[in-house]
Every structure is written in structure tokens, then in C-alpha cells.
Length: 206
Length: 193
Image 1 (cartoon, each protein chain N blue to C red):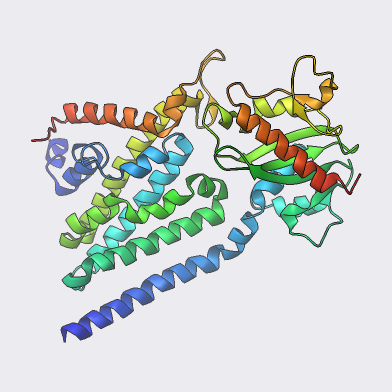
Image 2 (image 1 turned 90 degrees about the vertical axis):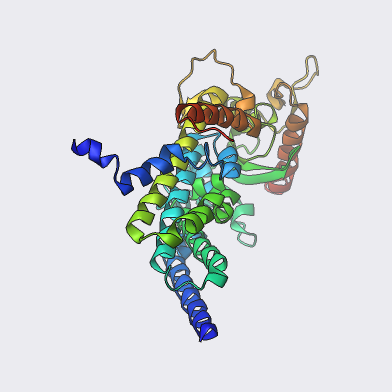
């Protein structure tokens, strides 16, 4: 009974929306550029996913915290300043403590600033909701993005390189599917997953 | 009143974000500076069977290698192993699609290759991109710059120790990579030998 009631709570719905029914990549089709670029290896997908999750949570929470003080005329500029600051923090942190991952992700960390998910959540959710729900929304959307990245990267790395997280998982006779290690491979996999999740959640374009 | 509110908001937001970035800079600036050399220095250490993390590689590198050439940038120097007398140096040059760079280690005779590692390349994945794989680079082990390396050709009449396999389907990358190694070898080792 308690479990049933939980399904109707706001925080559960927010979490569910971000991860599945309004998944930023597969349903809303946001953040596709980086999703295609960094998903040829699982390690990069995890780092990118965590980076975006941190930035979405932090920037949305900050926007929510100051939502009553943000002059509406300059709210978009304010989002950009806040998002940029957090992205720079992530970039510095990776360069300082995880230089190899920072190198692999190269320009894509900086491009989190232009990731539509981050700006989208600030404008669509954070500016109208209290911090606690905004935090959950940011976490849900970040995780929705991260999970898709990991699934796509797992398929691409296993079939394209014969490894998973750098560990060999395919037999020695395995011939790598090179197309999956380059960007078009990402399109195929994300397209198939979008089809699958949209069918599952019965989300159709009008 | 509205303008004043706007002005205060911009100042406060600017101050807060600048403070955050400055704080992170204080925390990471020194590490970022050190990490710039981590990639190639750790590769040289790894060529000698020494595996190390970001935090401790710098001291180990100083203990392991020496270089007489102190005028140039650290990355452009030729390093000698203090005990084994091997030579290691960083190389870079153009591939088909972009720069290829890495580290090579030679035996103490100065001509025999012990190990080659490609750190960065932008060649076609699955074709020229194989230039950075261990499987391909292991073909270079034991080969000699005598006086140069060349692509393996049947009945070439050359010493087999100076010939290396090319990457199947990536003749351009193979040629450029070998040319790069030959050029940089002459540049770095020409005066030392």
C-alpha cells in the first residue's frame, strides 16, 4: 500500500519522468551531440554522464535557490553564467585529478555549457519549483542521460572494440564492427533505443 | 529601483561564480601544471616496467632518468635510464588526419627499439587508427634504425631488422609513421651517436 502511494508522490513522478518517460536523450532528444561523440567507450560515457549530472543538479538547484531574485529580463544570461561556472569547475576538477579522462573527453566537457538538457531543466523546471524537487529533477535527468550513455557505450564498445571498460570480453576470433566505433554507429544505437523506449512508454509524436 | 536590483544581482552573481572558480583554481592549478607532463613521462616509465599514478610519477621519473640536454623544453629532451643506459624520447608528426605523437625507447646501443607507444592519433578508426594498438606497435620491438627503418617489402635486399610491417589497408598512415620516426630519430640521436 505504501509502495502504491509512493507512485503518486511528486518526487517519485519527477524521478520517473527524468529517467524514463521524459528521458532527455531518447524521448526529448536533447544532448544528442555529446551522446554521439563520447559513447564509443564506457569509461568516457560514465565520466561525461557524471559531469552532466553534477552540472544539471548544481545549476538547477542554484537557479531554484535564487529564483525569486532573478530579474526575468536577464534570466537566460543568469542561467548561462551559472552553468558556465559549474562546467569550468568540472573541467578543472577532471584536469587536476583525472587527466586521462579529461583528455579523452577533451572539448566535450566544455560543451556541457551548450547541452540543451542543462539549460532546458533550468528554464522548464528549476525557475518554478523549490530546491528539493529541483534537486531530484536534476538528478533524474542527469541519471536518465547517464544511463542511456552507458547502455549505448556498452553496445558500441563491446561490438566495436571487443572490450568493456577496457577489458576484453569477446573471443579472439571476434572481428570488430568498426562502424560502431565511429559517430554513425552512435546514431544507429540511439535510434534503436529511442524506438524501444518510446514503444515501451507509448510516447508517440503527433 | 528595477535597474538597481538588476545591477546588484549581476554584481552578486558575478562575485559568487568568480569566487567558486578561484577556489577551484587554487585547489587544482598546481596539479594541472604537473599533469601536463604525466602522459609522456608515465609512458617512458612504463617502457621500463614501472607503472605509476598521477600523484607520484614526477619523483620516480627524476630518480629513473637523466638528461644532459637542459636547454630545451623537458618534452623535447632525450632521456637516458640511469642504470640501463637506454634512450627514451617523445616524438610527434603528421599522420593522415592529424598529429600522431608518442614515446619511443631505444636500447643502450642507440639503434635497437625496445618499445614504442603512440599516445595520441586521429587516424581512421579500425584502419590507420590501429597505429596506436599494442599489437601493431609490438612489431617494432627489436627493429633497428640502421640507418633508418623502412616498410617490409619482399626481396628488398635490406636487413630484415630494419623492416617493419605496414598496417593492412592503411599504407598512408604506415608510411607517415615510419617517416616520422626516422626524421625524429635523426634529429634526436644524430648528434648523440
